[in-house]
Length: 368
Image 1 (tube, one colour):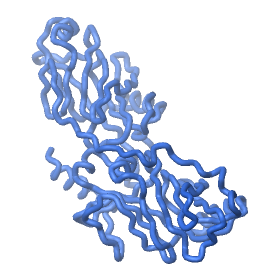
Image 2 (image 1 turned 60 degrees about the vertical axis):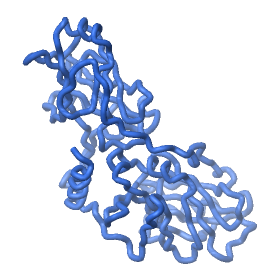
Image 3 (image 1 turned 180 degrees about the horizontal axis):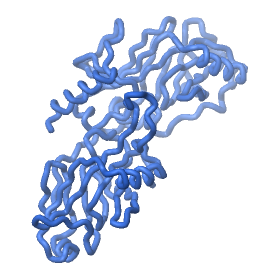
């Protein structure tokens, strides 16, 4: 499917489920920048993202599809509108630290379409992003500063200042919700000055592989290929002339149960979870596929030896992630197989099973 058609379908679906939002009041997209900070907080002279732009896009979970479409990431900084429970969690931590509140900010990280009004909140990044915030005028340069960050579920995290400039506070964070900037005596937050070793990594956007060589004929449009040499393929298939295809599928109840049960034991982030909304809009659905090996009109569900197969990562998966597949075996068990190649956009496995597959993704190292 062409990119424009995919994007149109995605944005239409987003509109149906309320993902589309009107542009923020007074917000201007900087045409020359894909990643930027939109600071509208009173009393805060400036704020900026110091992590390289392409790294921010990858850490923000942009899919191969969204990267190719030029989707950007921005950080909206505004005066805090947090509720009483959130404020209580923040002030309780400040009291524990014997710290004084300086300013509380809403920090909304979002994906955005540069040519339109589409936005989608990034709840958590897969790598820490470095942000520098200028302190309000009149802040005491002899004091120490930190951020108390509100995380999902009401937990809080203390982020110590990473830069030596007394007029700014710099922190590494993978969660952008509410930041309470607090002050204390010099050295009060030394224990919280923890810099991420990867916050300033200059990552390049990988190229999505759309064509893969194969020693076996591939049918349908799914990019994949058998890397095993023809002689070994011939031996593994009993000398039959075979072809391979991959198609999306909705498994039967037994197969789905077996696959989902095995996936729950992994660190995959796209494993099925119970929906909390009536329309089931927040349920994560794994990507199920049927890998079919055909010899004439006959289907071969397992071979006499393992074949090395490379498949393209589903186009809607995050580009910065680790990948694996869950494979349904002949006896109804499931094998989780980690990607064994170094290409960022493909999954390579050795298998003798040609049945139902589920593609998985997780944070870097999730399937080690």
